[in-house]
Length: 87
Image (cartoon, helix red, strand yellow):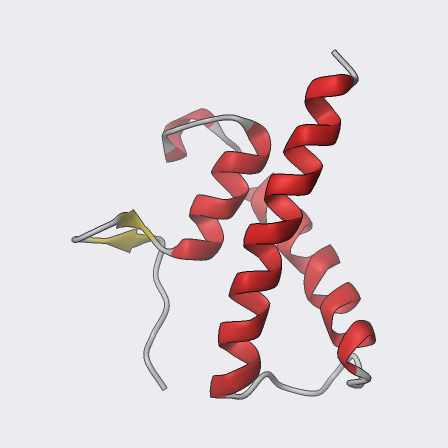
């Protein structure tokens, strides 16, 4: 399985972190706290597993990793839109 990192030389950040940056309305990793990203993604991995009927301790496979990334992109877009309406 490919190792995921925050930095991608072609895209700057890996897709899950890019989704988080979009959610918080930032463009740069220096503008966010990593703990906040970890909390956000941890919450959503549990929600995603629940939606897929997976156990909390069950690992994602190659297919569900891709699905989770797409899920996060959608969640980030929807949540950032909701947050804008609250301002």
